[in-house]
Image 1 (cartoon, helix red, strand yellow):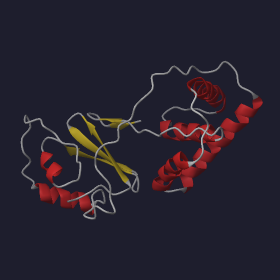
Image 2 (cartoon, rainbow, N blue to C red):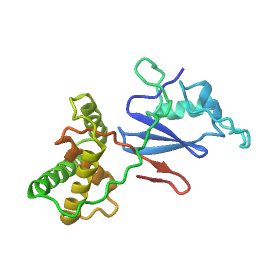
Image 3 (cartoon, rainbow, N blue to C red):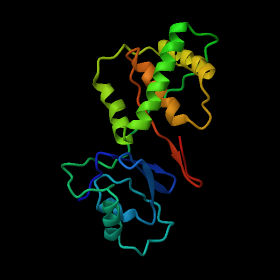
Length: 201
């Protein structure tokens, strides 16, 4: 039985299973229908019950070996983890941009954004993700939707004055995490993807 290594994350997107390898900072996609046989080899692999696709001529075992050579599967289940995609519950809250911000907020946003730039430049992406994940174990402020929305609105206002966010969603979201951590809030960092054409956000 194969398993997912700790540095890999999967999600099911339409007819494909998309794998994020944070160690190599890249995405891989597997046709979930043509390679449905992986469910018999990989622990909790996202199963596909759609019989409309054709079976791939490439043996499932060979595909698993190829994924192992790429480092996104392991034959050591005790060192790996389940391939079952994580379930993300997304809140439906409107956090409107604030109309002003205090000088202290500008300083905090500037510091958080510069910190995010340095982290992304000097740390391997795997360590960046681990840094964010470790914070979930820290003591945190009581959850308050109103307070969080206010902080996000303040961040958006100050950030829009200080920096451009065009096509910089990775950097800006990490900067927001750094800013919120200063207020002892540690939200989950969620990567979303879609295929045909492929894009991540």
